[in-house]
Amino acid sequence: MTEALQKMAGSFPEVALVDIGLPDGSGLELSTVLAGDPWRMRVILISSDGDAISSQEAMEAGAVAFIPKAEMSSALLHSIIGDGYSR
Image (cartoon, rainbow, N blue to C red; front, side, top):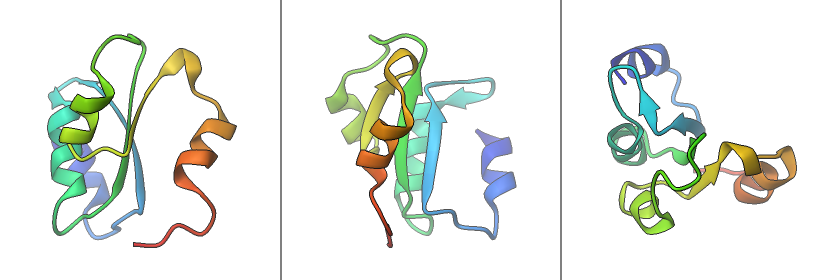
């Protein structure tokens, strides 16, 4: 989690694809941080465990979606992110 925040410092990406399991924290915690100020990112949570969290837990953590890695595709990501997303 710390490494992700350090790498994004000053760049403010619009979208973040975040794994639930991070070496130094929780993807849910990172989602909460990134969805809030000053980041205000659109966060998509992912996991190799399709039952890792519920969609409601993802939304409560500020994410716009939870996608099991086995179901992830460019078409699905595109439908969530959309064209020309702007904060």
